[in-house]
Image (cartoon, rainbow, N blue to C red; front, top):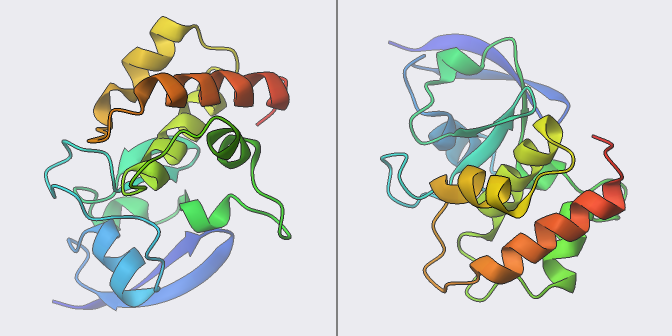
Length: 158
C-alpha cells in the first residue's frame, strides 16, 4: 500500500509516495537520487548505509520510512556546505582514511553521529562506536586518526 509521506532530507522536505515500511535506504537512493548512502549487507551489519536521523547514526537499510517521518535526516551529501567539506570529510581526506571508498560515506556519517553526541571521544570510545561499520580494506587506524583530527578541528561544535 502506497501513501504520501513527507520527510526532511538534508534540510529539504520531500513528498514521497511509498509504502511506509519501505526502507529509508531505498527511498534515499531510488526516489531521491542520493546515492552516496550505499547498500552493503541489507542486514544492519556493515554500516555502509549509515545516515543521521536527528543527529544520531542509523542504518538506513533496516529503518522503515515510517520511522523517519518528523525527523531530520542527513546523508553524506548533506554534510558539505557551499562547496566546503565538513571537518569530518576533510579529516578523512587529510588522514588518507579510505582506500576503495565503499564504506567511507557510512563511516563519516557514523563519525558525525559520534561527534554529535560526544565531541571529544577517547580512542576506545571511537573504536567502540565505530564497531558497527566495517571496512574491508582495513583502514581503521587512519579512520580513528581522522575522527580524532575532526574532533580537534570542530572544537566540540556540532
